[in-house]
Length: 123
Image (tube, rainbow, N blue to C red):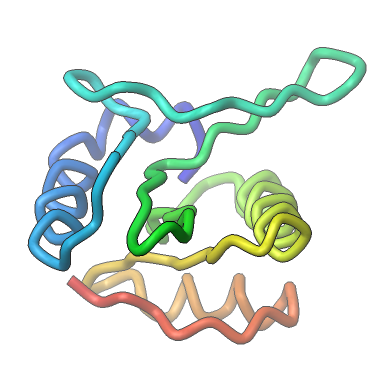
């Protein structure tokens, strides 16, 4: 999700973190209040800052998790997901999308527009 929507969906981020902890993920960092923030990436001109929603490690593999919720700015969301997908493939990491009921179609439409074939984590 994009930065402006994170304040409204803190509860869903916390629910996702609890789910990942139950799956055995460690060193979980989330872009929400009360958690250590993950590393941010800044475009060279300095106007765009991309921060993954959640990062975690499991068995020495790093995972980037994005929350797939309906957005008013799908173009910005698409560019963020494309960047994180390229970054994860470049560094041999994993990239996953977490979504919930009512947001499946929107998330699948965004993934289809990007030609990304991801299995969604449905909470």
